[in-house]
Image 1: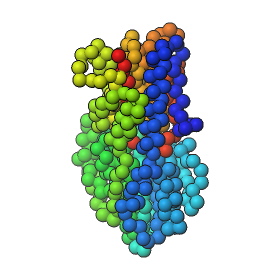
Image 2: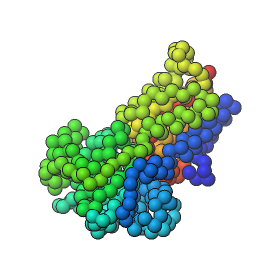
Image 3: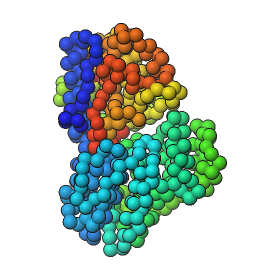
Image 4: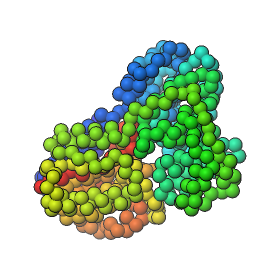
Length: 435
């Protein structure tokens, strides 16, 4: 994170000493949580469990790719013949000896995404039975390394991605379609590695942690087919072009067995890290769920209801001060033309419901430091957030209606700005409550 610390303002209005203290606690929890889930530990653990004896080619793809590749390079040293890192713009932290580093588009694939995928496949194609592949995968890989399936163009893939991101589909549904529109996803990278074998170390940003869906499963058997694809299209009433539909109607399962897939990081780990750091700040932690997948606005409303319930003393089983924790990945059905992300939307809906409450602070955080197409990792709010907005003439309802949580939260200093964190384990929302 920037300067080893999340840059979180405490609002433009006057806050009580208690509320200011709670927001400082929230900053400490955010900082400690991110540091605990950096993927270096995951890479070290995985490399202790596998045997890599032959010449090694390293293929790292995803938002956490640079950090994972850097750690692998430290451990494996001269055993690495060649390596490539494909990550999001701004997520590279410099050169890694022996590696080529390519930055590309996310959440929308771009020309660099296609170039990156082409370079990855070239490296995969030159491996022989005497080589081994180490594939380091993390969330974002679906967009960062992409090559259109025969009959499609990059613009086709961009159009489909935009439709999927706005319709409210979850990540499993999104990747079910994307696998069948791609020349690298859904086990196809593993096929290019043949006759070599290898191991994929995977940092999960998908609820359920199934390697078939993380970064769209480039090294894992694809168990979906045309029936699964059409089910998603029907459920969300997707309007796709004829050439895209023709490709999807031919979708087939892909079976691969030359790559061992190991999932090390997960949203459960993220929630437990948040729990541990909340306890360090003196809060009794309660992990409510780590597999949430509802609409962002519904989760924000749920937290607001919990805030009123627990501050009114309706539960006798809670030890105060306390921290309520929920992890997962929500969705946003975009109806407006504003700017934001799912965590910012959670925070703003929660702020609306928490209006007037004392001694409650909530933050919602994307662990990779990028919430939607913004420079924010999420939002931090309290019972006075909406009042501060209204004091400067803002209509919170209008911002919610327009899906413009970013500008609403920015106006009162309630965005979380961390910069790229180097990890990617889904999202976590934490509400701190004192009595």
